[in-house]
Length: 421
RNA sequence: GUGGGUGUAGCUCAGGUGGUUAGAGCGCAAGGUUGUGGCCCUUGAGGUCGGGGGUUCAAGUCCCCUCACUCACCCCA
Figure 1 (spheres, chains in turn blue, yellow):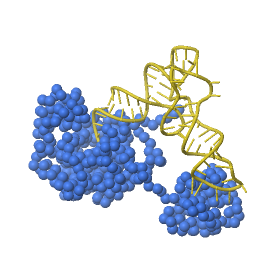
Figure 2 (cartoon, chains in turn brown, yellow):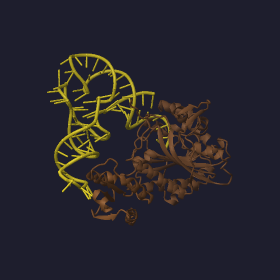
Figure 3 (cartoon, chains in turn orange, purple):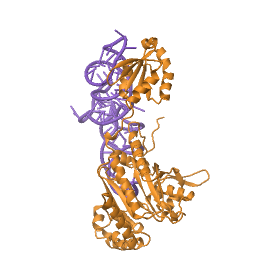
Figure 4 (tube, chains in turn brown, cyan):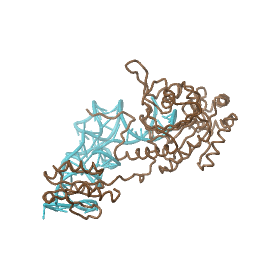
């Protein structure tokens, strides 16, 4: 029986895995520098957690979660995103104290049952970060500057940062109502989806891609114009800080987020090279979520970035070269018998060394050594064995020297460290 | 969930109007040097032509179904 992988998931093969390692190591470094520490949370939670945080009415919860019952009949779901779990963990462990800030990051697979598409998989990897305990607008700007720096370090070209503010519980309801009234009047010009959204989630109509809908909502009231004084001041401060730091951005008053918990600052980092799935990173403030999930009132902000999307944007030349190994080429059975112990001693000294296990010809072994980028090849044949030496070939200069078997490990350790290999 | 495109060796792809043993390049393996890499040359391995059904004397090629991939809608990182 031929077994295949599940639809919408993919293997990250050895040729490509460097991209994930690179993204992980660079972002980990930056986030640590910004004062974030890692938290590792479960891949599944009670379904209710996601329903209450992301929003019962959202598509993610309504039809995209991998939900199942365990043997006790509890409804569990594979996480469709990371923020809910992080918030839950912080509440569970009572880590959210008044007047203190905590900064956490996470990474790992998320699961959503969507139709697979370019940059959209059913198991996909995200890196995310959250700041709890302050609504200081400088922190919003700090998060954005961190993303800006991250993309710079990764060498990702052609991205733009869009920001918006969705207001708070004081000012958003009024805006929502005003927008709804406007949309009802324009209803004739809207697509069927947008007519439905007018009732369920009017803000999303602003995000519709259809030209007709865009046209019809040209004159729609702007969120930004309806912000209360505090939200307005907050948004102005974020923009000012970004300006002072030289982080380029665009204000997009139609930028709306899909998850219900967002308040005030929201943002997306868009790429011009990804087709329809063009959001590489996105996030925003969610000042009400912690309390809503049963924690103390705690303002918070965070983001998540999609690793697959980022990986496709990485310039190929980013590929880092790994340390050039030593290749041990035995010839004949007597020589091959000496190999295991020799390998062990070399590796115990921290030397990267590889060998042939198939008893191939020297020519084959040389080819193989060349392919794996070996710096040196140690040839051990009958002649060498009887002389008690190993013939050490420098693959770059082609120079060959006889090294006594006795001191081989020490000598090669010195030779290879001397070249920073 | 809805539409469009595509499915031939590990990879990238050729295979007019259906007609004998299905091809190339790259990659892989062996050899060209009695024990020596990159270039070059030779040879070789590797394919139920996504799967199933149908039309036909004959199907990789036509028809139907199905699955997968892909792009867009939708949704979103």
